[in-house]
Image 1 (cartoon, rainbow, N blue to C red):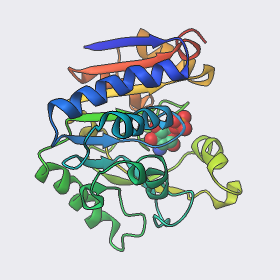
Image 2: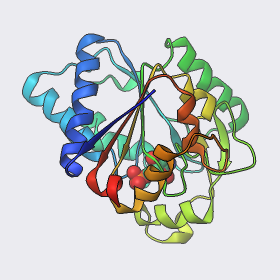
Image 3: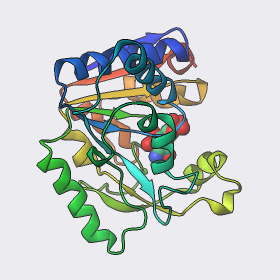
Amino acid sequence: MMKIFVGKNYEEMSKIAAKIFIGAIKEKPNIVLGLATGSTPIGLYKELIRAHKEEGLDFSRVTSFNLDEYVGLSPEHPSSYGYYMKEELFDHVNILRGNTHIPDGKAENVEEYCKVYDEMIEKAGGIDIQLLGVGENGHIAFNEPDESLSLGTTIVKLTENTIEVNSRFFESIEEVPKTAISMGIGGILKAKKIVLLANGEKKAPVIKELLNTDRVSTKFPVSFLLLHPDVTIIVDEEAYNG
Ligand code: GLP
């Protein structure tokens, strides 16, 4: 079942999402969170930092797993998702660094590493809440539209569109890696609860399609969320109305 909340603007969208995450962390202090990167969750992370600083929200027993990372980038690279997570969340709350997991873009044996990543999630008890953004082409994590989609964590080839859209986080488009490690669709659907955020008019076509389709398609990866029993979609008015 999909629930939808429409915030007036980005700030309101972020606050609605923060309420869910703050409530969940308070209810289960040793929660396992699935985390996402990109522009969309920054406001949510700011709210979580505020709740930690002003209300003492405790991350000391929280575990996290991130959705994806570019192949070839170490967490020291300013465009890596490892770097992003430190800057936008981890450095500002009391989460233990050893409890945070981000796919290793420098892994030597990527295939083996992907299996280990999924095993680590399982050993942690599975993801309680998975945060998601969505690409303009309907990708979730880096599961790009394709003939088939991977169930488990895997190495993926990024589409031209994604490389172009994400080049804003790099000095030039040539610097954007062509491949990434991404959790698979099966891994995402294993999360007990999913919270998808989308803001801005560029996401409006994707949100419209998602809310109006009754078909799943590998060409529109976000449609697989229709198979999950507990999905909350939080958007701003621009993403809702276009
Ligand atoms: C990126 C990430 C996704 C993210 C999506 C949307 O490429 N791999 O995890 O959700 O695209 O990004 P943004 O929030 O910047 O629009």
